[in-house]
Figure 1 (tube, rainbow, N blue to C red):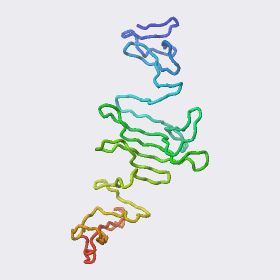
Figure 2: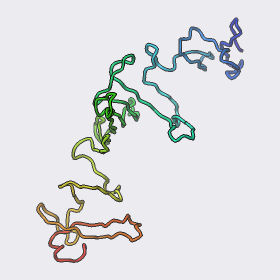
Figure 3: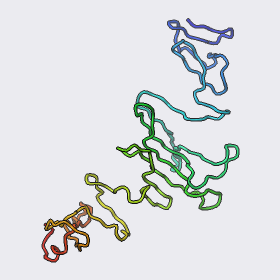
Figure 4: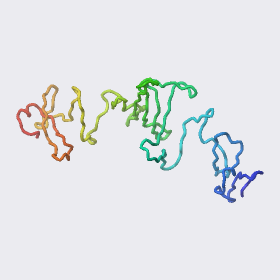
Length: 260
């Protein structure tokens, strides 16, 4: 059964008497006292078309957090098409000091925006990773006044937290650990094939080997070491065109012979 008001507008579609797909115009929908910006939705529990604010508002302005909920795989993002190379989809974060009506320039260290990954810990949703954008200097309208850095924050496995800075990407093209003398570049099972640098500063050259490759004697503080070539590049460059070396003790180096 369908119920109409005095103007002939559809109010409800009762169970067993019609269906929700019989609407042919949004004008067929009527709800009591809708507010500005409300959305129309079908309430299957009571068989009514109802109106509610799908997005939270404060003083006419949307406020967060805003969630898109779905119990399956969910993706969203801009899709654009153009023959111009400069056209692209964008997600924008806009940040100021002051107020929305009277914004002022951001200052050094201010958050500009975050991408946040959260997971449920059995009690509530908690942040596990944050990719944040920060003002690197006080912003202004003159030249060279919009320095920005990116900071990757992670919750470290096996710790009680909290989430903290791990890697920093500075505008001067510096890639930094967030803390001094922390972190490694690769490990025993995940090694970089080739690492190149213009300068390796004094004292920063280290080896995983703790003993001489030839005689097996452990290295001690004050030992003089030599590097022995253990592999030369393939002329065709198939192995990365690099020479591989290992440290040996001075005694073995003077005695000659291969690395063992």
